[in-house]
Amino acid sequence: MSHESLAYGCAASALVGIVFYALLGGADFGGGVWDLLASGPRKQRQRDAIAHALGPVWEANHVWLIFVIVILFTCFPSGYCALVVGLFLPLHLALLGIMLRGAAFVFRNFVQKTLSRQHAPSARALAAIFGIASVISPVLMGISFGAATSGNLRTNQSGAVWFEGASKIGWVSPYSVMCGLLALAACSYLAAVYLTAECDGALRDDFRRRAIWAGTITAMLAALVLILARREARWFTEQLFSPVVLPIVALGMLLFAASAITVWGGWHRLACFCAAGQIAVLLIGWGVAQRQFLIYPDVTLAGAAAPAATLRFVLKCLPIGFALLIPSLGLLMFVFKRSALERG
Image 1 (cartoon, rainbow, N blue to C red):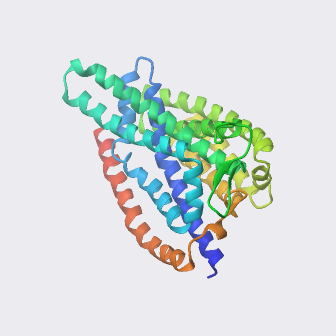
Image 2: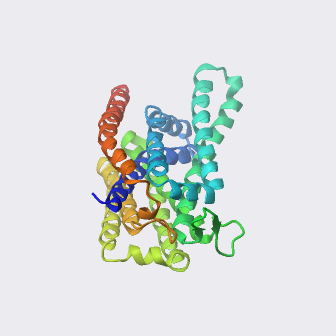
Image 3: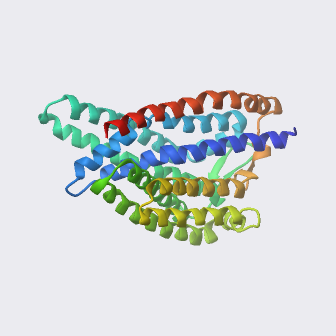
């Protein structure tokens, strides 16, 4: 196998990790958003449902983020260096948000379950931290995606990294900010759809309405992102509408329409599969569109790849890792989700 083929194989493995993180970790972020926006007579029941849905697996989902980071700095060290230097602030703020939301989630539940009512203000403060961090992290990750695909993040052979463009803060532009808002809306939509399958009765109707609103906003933001991409990331737009990528994008749009129809019609389990499929297919479309580059236009996958021996070793180890990881996560979800259903 050639060096270039090995690089593409490792990049495809990282894309698999991104897809799983979006489907699982992204829904966790969305759950935090709905926790922050809980309202109405069933406000506390909404938060309890979110906590029960997140509780068994929310921290385990970050294994996919760790997996992607390890693949990047092992297989594409120079590209990883350029990314973390150029996007140091948004990426580290996103990681800070992940840590804050995790700590706030744990301590809030501890305060609510074990301490007296006089600690209610502490529980409310922790709930606010959990919700706000759940908003900030996906927005910053989406902004980082926009900055990496815009073509404004530049690097050279000496390792210098800089941003081109008029913005004083290079990673903040209309296109990248809109990508951040789109990531937030997609996470919220995914979480709301999942929660319709976790609940029943009036509580299910609450999350169904939220799913409809979040899906509508997601579609509107996606259209705005495409409009802005025509101006700020034209190369990426051309790739999305190329003969190779366009069928993948079209399939993603069909799955989005199917998820909207199934949510509206009350086919909640099917809606979960359609919504997850939509996100997965669109992320795969993005990966295929950017298949030659880690950072456009200066960092190609082949150029940033580690020596062939390193790539070959990683690819040989991945089946062993997946054979241990995926059944473990499946068993974790099966045990706790079954327990939740039996309690219900």
